[in-house]
Length: 252
Length: 269
Image 1: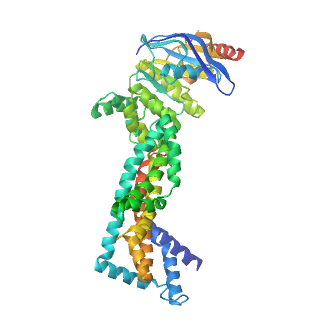
Image 2: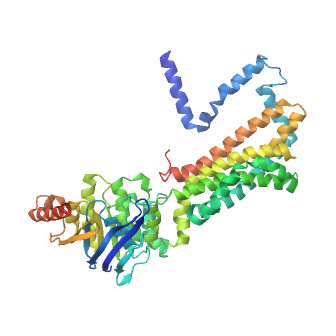
Image 3: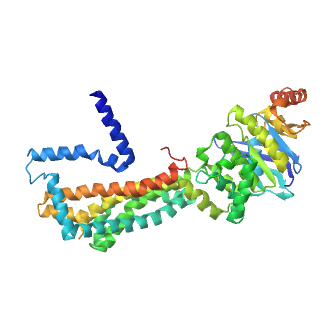
């Protein structure tokens, strides 16, 4: 796990329908320390997914720089694991094979990579589902697989793009609690994109509020861990922080 | 009475569940029965429309003389050879056109143009080039199989969600491995559809080609029977065509579909 530095990042693209240049991300700078959990929160269209796609290397950036462990990002790579909102599991691979995919690409032998996969599946309480195909699982279970598939490849940075936005509210709370538990156990560097303020405050060490492609503020979350919704629902500090972030996002 | 019918019905359902082949034969029983009744009533002259019994008898004698097995083998081998080359050329071409924008721009209009010139339309010129032989037949089959395979492969490749490409890339897959790990399996359900269409068209094209240029095969059997005025053998040929396709579909194509697209939840059952 390594740190991530974003300096004066910007993204401008030509919109052929409007006939003008559109700037989706303005001069964003952000430093994420090794082992830190940072949430980027903002309304739709604020540029948060664009930032994540640029960090992942899926789309090029037009200004500034992105450094992972000091090395500039040029295209996608296994040093940055990604968890997608649409899960993006390989439908033709079993759960076990999905999780073993990253190690397989690194050339890890079959016995070893399956052992790694089993270990990570156990971490997400998915041991029973190892032999099943993604289509046979519920949305919540599919995303658990998505998270451990990215983690099993031991990336320097874990990028999560609204990963829990397409599961039901109850499952989402469970997944959020599980993610904080897994994060505490493995301590990956995480950048988590969401539009849900409560989710951001619940998960993060730091919340970065974004609006119209600019960073509004960077708020440290000093809530104790392990975190659970039972404890935090009525917690005064949690409410205070959530309100602060919410007002920030809404005011812009 | 109602009780009895319900009991019979449940019995039939259970029987069909235990032996699925019964369920696929059952729909033919009324068709054959109607055919038999029409011929027994002598609505049409026997020479124009022979009954099932004569057709079965003719089947027996053609098998006994060895003509039918030899012709059947010829037709199946021709289709298999043609289909093999059609698939072997069609899938790589489809993947290239599906993935590469430049290849698509260059080849798509050509594909549509040549697809429109149907298989049989090539026969006159092919006969001049290659004569009345296996080469002509193979070219026609390959030509017929390749278009549905290519067009469906392109569709399959282009319908793979971009997030699957991205997921594989950020898990460390190289461009070459992406082909094997993402593109090919992702396009497979469509490739099977293309293969099904291609084989179906190919089978028809084969029979038509055998009628025109053949010296053996089921198509030739039927055309030869017309020359000698044997309606029984023409009917037999037609029935064999239907049965053979049914076997190819339910023993080869359907199991492939069950093991891939359906299993993976990409195709609704």
